[in-house]
Length: 258
Image (cartoon, rainbow, N blue to C red; front, top):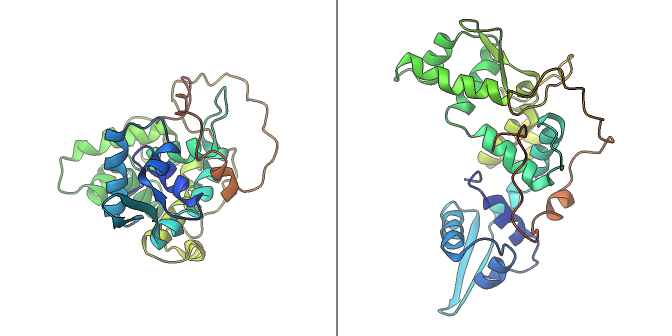
């Protein structure tokens, strides 16, 4: 519902206005989107129940967040907090909304959710066992492409070909994110995330957290200078980047897979 590019930005643009916006007012806040791109996205968000389209007259139509759309917004800082800790450093630090979009892309790759949940429940597990849990009606070898992708993304670890798979430190740390998304999807308050039966009791890893991103980054590269400690990503962090002057630049090689 929210992964397609620009969807979260549209929701944030609507949330930044005290009143519903007319189509041209909303489009003006995301000027790099062409009309043939923008209109399908607003229609999709309306169909998903996140945005409400109100036709006052044939020439006066407004768009505003539904209660369900508004209830999603507090989830976004939870995602950004994880990204700040686990996505690879970039030469030019991305905005909070870029961090959220990059994280959502990693989490919604095909079969990613099923594999992450299975590994969280079962612990270290073979590829064959994961196949039976996640895609039992497919060819067993189909489990390996998504496993390789999750390993390259830094969310899953393995000791080598034929060895079992396990969540990486970054994958384990997804507990608050997946718990919050699950609570929102179920229509429950975010406080329910801590009671999620799978992700509600994630423990912080005792080993240093790897940065999630491109797998070919040299392991001998000295660690980057730590960023100053910052509090949990706030709602205003997202607002400050919701309506940039232009589309975000692509991150350089070595940044998060998008």
